[in-house]
Length: 457
Image (cartoon, rainbow, N blue to C red; front, top):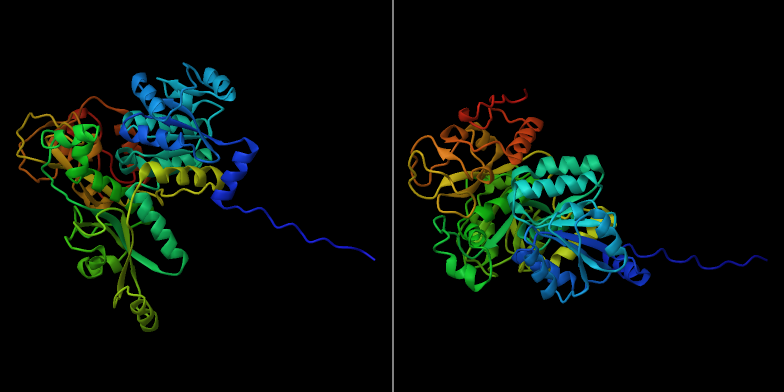
């Protein structure tokens, strides 16, 4: 007579249980942060709580005093300053958190499992991401400036390296994309997604935002970009590139309403049903977070949705009433490391771009001051429309000098400006355009001596 024993249940593969298992085994995910501004400090604080199964192992910042502040606020006192990846390896293995002014000490360290890039810089941030890929490290971009400009190219480079690139849950693109994926997983059809905004004023500038920035201990240009639509446009571009959605018009519709579910009646049905759109609400409760609009034409299902207080249809709004970048980011880190699952990443080439628009009347010879400045703001547009006018991306605008005078609210093209000395971001953006050519010419304008690149060439 043979005896049988009940087969052991397979271990749970949920993020929570896998993190608990790592904590129990003393093998936490070792996270390296590059960037110690307001968001970087908030992330360090959250990881220093600590998060079960996760450890802040390194932080790099070009100004070490800012990184020291981040560690101090996170109550991490056992840290060591290092200069090289080898020194970082040794210190991390001994249980220390390391601080460096060179991000290579983090991106090249064998003791780091994932890099969080949170500088808000395009050229510098691109270098961090590419070096991390070269050393087979997944990257979480908390950098909409970079992601909205060359996210598709960076995703391709990450795929080639066999690692994950992802934007983060907690920022609006991740909040909305997590909701998109949930709706898809239960058989609903998303046709729109976006941000719940309190206000948008294209003409805010560092002077108008100085008090807010000081009160909240943030960079004034950063908070200017929050108010003048540039950050909104960058975030919805990240979401558009992850969903394949476009926009109904340049800058989106942005209807004002009292409650976000009113978007079911306010967003344009045609564009939603013809490929989907990203958009936003203004002033709508719950005043923050992300939303998804789904479409349902089955009459029986519409009756059921009405019964559950979602409205009469055929469009229905689902929403998440918060976005908490520093708190929700550990979920993105865990999904990337444990399941190789990006929270939000480009599907392929760019679906949308963020174009440069004059914030005031500008004169020939004026120099553009970039994101969050006095001279311009960014608006999302469809990739095809942006390339048809050879539009100047807002993330490449800083340092450009006007070749002609332009009026307020006029979109700028590469033909309107003399570019600064070639930058890495220019080269990477052109590489992305060659990889996914548009139907019309593109280039960096006539003054560089750079040959204009025809689509497909």
